Length: 293
Image (cartoon, rainbow, N blue to C red):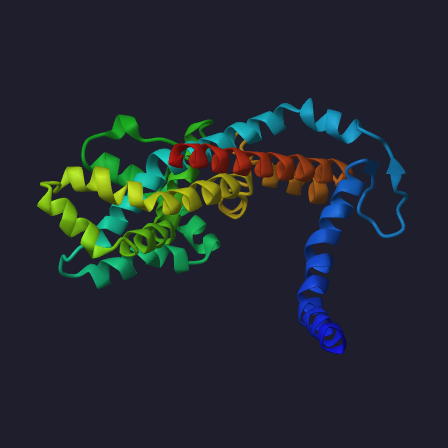
């Protein structure tokens, strides 16, 4: 009995630091955000906290900027699944092949991930500048002056520019996720496939892709949640402008809290994002499990 008690105490002591940190930095902020979402508060110490019920939620859901920000998040997801996923998987196939120079390729592809998001954003803002940017100068140099654009000030075009910069930046990170899945496939499987005449494209279709399903699952969940919480790249490149055309939910939340001092509305946006993120993650997980079955 004493041994069992001492064992339980030891377990609790080991778990206590992690549990305290979890309560302080995750559970309490989430509960406080939910609480504030039903109240009006200007974020000033000593300012009155007034209960307003569902008013913050109705104001957020009736705001066109909120729905536009969700649409922009959808653009991020489309870019993730249509561009980033095949690009990252293709790079993973390349670096796990027996070609020479794969170590150098692995390092060069991963380099953008190691750069500061702000540095990447400023670099691309400079390149996309309509007056002296490299992109417009290149188009002019090859005789395509009619394609020159004010890339970051044109609605719809600006968010797609940010999406493509995001894909360029995170291709190396997702490449490693897919590479880990490909490396874990036993060599015997490929040898057996070769004996059955399954080579080249067939080997990719019937061996590499099906046996990398866990990597695709991880990518899908990270892509969905990452797109919903995208902020730093958007804020550094356009600050959600002009006229909210490149706004994402996180930048809208930031503006409501720190520009308009409406912490109740910003908390409501945060809660809606949390619910949406969890729902989409469960949906993606369910769909992938059904495909496996």
